[in-house]
Image (cartoon, rainbow, N blue to C red; front, top):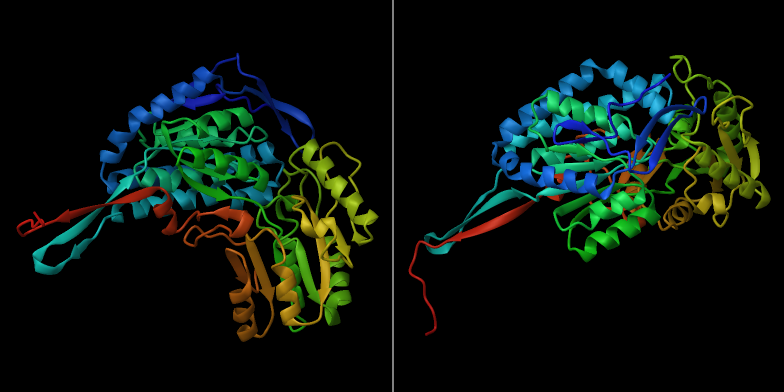
Amino acid sequence: MKFQPHASHFINGEYVEDTNGREIEVIYPATGELIAKLHSATPAIIDLALKAAQDAQQAWAALSGTERGRILRRASDIIRKRNYDLSVLETHDTGKPLQETTVADATSGADALEYFGGLAGSLTGEHIALGGGDFVYTIRQALGVCVGIGAWNYPTQIACWKAAPALACGNTMIFKPSETTPLSALKVAEILCEAGAPKGIYNVVQGYGEVGAALVTDQRVAKVSLTGSVPTGRKVYAAAAAEMKHVTMELGGKSPIIVFDDADLEDAISGAILGNFYSSGQVCSNGTRVFVQKGIKEAFLKRLTERLGQAKIGDPMDMDVSFGPMVSERQLNIVKGYIAIGIEEGARLVSGGQQLKREGFYLEPTVFADVTDKMTIAREEIFGPVMSVLDFDTEDEVLARANDTEFGLAAGVFTADLTRAHRVVAGFEAGSCFINTYNLAPVEAPFGGSKASGVGRENSKLAINHYSEMKSVYVSMNSVEAPY
């Protein structure tokens, strides 16, 4: 099956190609089949995109928020109408099961466009009365040209999560998808144009790291938003800071899920499954350190193993399949390396751990028990279907251990004692927390991390502050006094 786009890049309202760029091969993870070939952006392509975005920005910002919002909401409607086709593309881009992509990918992108489209007309300043009749009024202004750099695990969603608040505020955007999953963002750009977005408002350029670096450091760029790993985030953050650019960093994690002995066991296991094996474990907020109180640890492991046996692994285009392949052979090998380290360091392999003997990049859902805090699999982000189960005695002890990490993206707690639940959540050093559930990301709520897991927030009204700035205007109604 082929998914070859019209060209590699989408700039100024049309597809653009430059075959001088380094080749990008798009591989279907379920089979290892080559389904498309694209080209990384050359300096000429990068400059073309920057010029298009810069030229379009002032006219776009001059529209009323209501007019901009109308376009975003139309794009949301188109995405919902074409959800199945976009989900099929997402499945081939990432390998995630169609059962998942039809409910969690393009639909999430549509939610973001709808939400920020509805919010756009309400983006106003305020009047501040001062003594003697003087007053200040504020004007919310767009930043200018924004660069979005996407990760490979949710390409459609991330393309929209970054586009929606940026465009609602009157910015233009250049989006660089991951070279591993480059196809979906092109469809988002097409749909925005179809919905009435002027040319140059949302541009997509493909490429490897050097393309992102060229965009981040260009003086025409006012804002950089990255979804990616912590090492990449540190590099991009430093480069943007050197140019005094606005930044949003949504990075990785090694998030904890705490299960107390009074928790509903089935709910806790459901949360652990969603926090470790959804998208084959390739989710930044995954709760991969599952702390289970000692009294229920073996019951938890026994029931977890039974339920993992019910996972249907296979062709991701089969709507009955609930667990698909890793995104690439490279990621598969990284995760296999961590499994080997876990065994070597003495963790108990409870289930899984093997690559499946079939075409594609399939790895069994894997659970380790008797994991200690210092083990590599409990310290480093694996980004694959590997759960580490750790046991604990007391609340104070487990909270201190849960926070003992450089990361702070997410955290969850399962307990029937809601007083304790709120107490534990208050103590978590993490940006996105969950009580008796896990890994939900509604567009109405802020999403993002603390510590090394990120800077700023995506989604919700808070995102508006990351894509705009306030101008204060002091108006005097009195004579101006000076000392001389």
